[in-house]
Image (cartoon, rainbow, N blue to C red):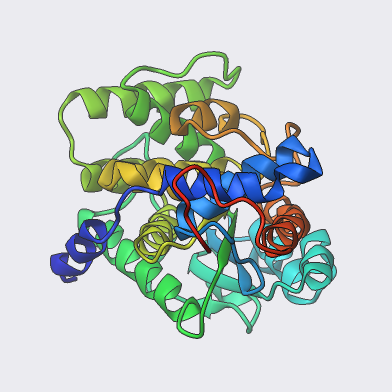
Length: 334
């Protein structure tokens, strides 16, 4: 673990460009499609260009099980996380079909599955293990959380090595909904309301207490997150440092975004919310100040929502590159 890696990445994250976002919006305004305009703003601001790009894309699905959701028995190949991972790997999942149609390769990452021996052989294995029960003690050690962040940073840098315009994210893992409530509580500094789940409400209150105690961003991630949370947060931070917009899916990726923003608030300008999601996601998006592309819940957060945004990004980039068009009030070019 080298603390300089995280510090370097965080220091490299500057604010997204509102001026370029507006210039990109003006380039697509002729289509009279408000959702495309909002996407243009997000892409242009993150990429710092009036002519957004989207051809080079990838969807990273990060797997990590949480101790708070541990079924208590070994399920092997029948573990729900393993079953879902195999469906993605063998192409039978809806995500796989959507990704094929949109020309986005899927990178499946095992950051800490409860049954690692049953995971698909194609999954990229990162050093990590399923977390402990966050309601019984810290879910991870600070060292484990830091290593997860570094692994996520390395993942994003590797994916961007040949050029990357858009990074889509998805997540798989039991207990992620409870962890998301805890991280939401930490971000709010108050217990989330309206969850209608006693375990999640307890976790949210626990997260709020931890935040009020003055815990650092890393301590909060370690205490409340899971292995996939740390890897996803690291990937988000690295992407933002490289001016790459990140498409979030549901509450697991949303919780990771909250964790990333605790390290670098400017990350908010590089996030695109695919969907309204379920459970804690609407409240998470409110904290992030992100308006979802689709105002409904899509899939389970494994990346389906992110994949559904990609064809709209294609429309935005096609419109933005069609002729010179207006370049915004500041005269910004592509």
